[in-house]
Image 1 (tube, rainbow, N blue to C red):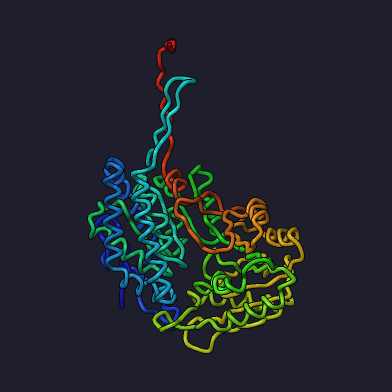
Image 2: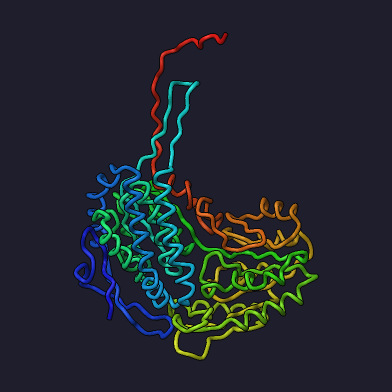
Length: 483
């Protein structure tokens, strides 16, 4: 049985731990590997290794740090198929999704922030009070905590800017899906990344995450995960006045107007609800449809959802995999039962699939209003609700009738309407006639229960650095006259 150990300094593999936890194969609901069960002592060792490595890493030229990240990206790309297979089995997702989208995105994250390391610039100001210039200094040791749903995709999204900015990292991937983060940490050592610059500690949040967040040598924490855990992290970091970036949950609206080309875009609309079995914070789980097209749209959407092919990660043609764990399977099934009790009408799905593993059929529900829990609380599974609206104001009210504010998509041919909704939706990201189109230069994050701060591009580089202004007093002088 494979074992995924910590990566602390130059040490990795089985020698890094004497305590282990099972890692489950979601498609078969049985353990297939073990992961190190870390604790506060593991965090202490990792922070010590990072603290020792941080000054040397920060002292490198930006171009030298960039070359390290480029080498890691090249090595990951050379092993793309192996990483994709590991990711698919570990998380239960279709191999094609891991191979064609998620691992390539991890490679892109490393390359993008390698380039960002050489392009990140500070400011200078003069003409008012001396000559001022701003230094953007690494923080030192930072913590990166990534979730189970997009394991390597989001792990690299955090560690790449932290490393590019000159910090040493102690990272905690989810103990539910630890495979590819571990493999990447070992690969980083193979490619020559200095030991201690990237450390990986496995284990439950209470045993590893909390000691990492509370450690006085950890100067910032970047977290992606649930709103409840985000609140806990903020509560620990707040008294220490520690920087935090919190990318939390979503209950995203997909707003479909009658004038849109929705029939041609139906595959994208269905994918936006069910990709990765709905286990993406950006999935559009609340579909708001103009009443004039509601019956036709509903029937077409349900038909396309029913046609999604459910299967294990290595099954040919699989489009929908299982829930990642027994606990999450139970959570989603309970949410479906709650929707029924609230008066929801299940149009398709609504039940577990009769096969081994934690599979749930794609589920579409209508008949529920904006105030019910099913339309306000994140489910994070293959469950979408449908609501009809009568006007632009009605659509905007329904879209904003939620405490979350991560993203929304709006489908319309009306350019003025598109701009208006872009300005008035209370979310961090608005897509017009598309979904999950990502330019890595743009800010990423949400409002309300969806978190604090922004990731991506210069936002990430600024988060992982400390600005320091240097003001040089200059003698006064008289400007020369121009002839």
